[in-house]
Amino acid sequence: MKNIPRIYIEDNIKPGITIPLTRETLHYLTRVMRTRNCLVFGGGNEYSATVSDDDKNLIIGEKTSHIDPSNNITLMFAPIKHTDDLINMATQMGVARILPVITARTVAHHINWGRMQKIATEAAEQSNRNSVPEILEPVKFSELDLSDVVFADERVAYGADASTDFNTDKILIGPEGGFSDTEFEMLDAAHARGVSLGKTILRAETAAIVALAKILK
Image 1 (tube, helix red, strand yellow):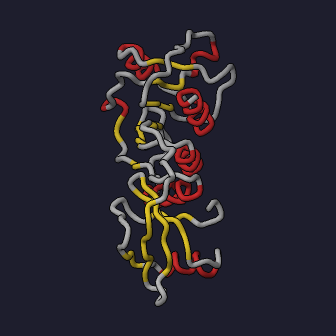
Image 2 (tube, helix red, strand yellow):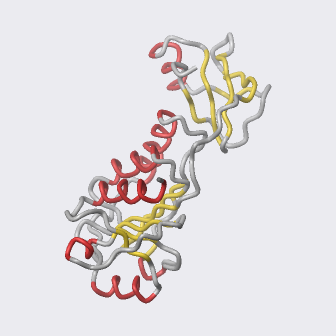
């Protein structure tokens, strides 16, 4: 079944119902993929589906045995120039929620979040997930609950101690210019755990994936 295209539909799917087909999805299935069969998913479940004879609907079939490989992690990050790459990769890593955080050094303030949601949906379809991560409304750093947070700590590259406790479902990645002194003070005061990402300073999108890999292993 690995060659069958996967389409995100909605979270309330069940066998026997019909879902109206968009022109774009119909074209993708019948013209690009040259098939009338697909898998549809949402809400953690996956189902077989077939294009109706009149090309207007998807007929939902039985639920498959595929278990959603996603996790319960919330990725908190400062929006960056390559936010689209970060969301694509984080979705592939299975995160449940994506929370943009406006820090003192955040420079990317005009992100098209509708486009980011589409990128997350396409990445979920391609990465064998049964769910699409929720992209939450941006919040200010000062509004964050920093308890039980693991964050990418660039200070470790300069000799600071790093935590080895990765037991969390909240990961925080700073902006391209790093956290400010005040933000580091707030993180330390909240006993957030700074983790090492190596001896080099990584780009923000790379740092997010390295941090996720540490948490998930």
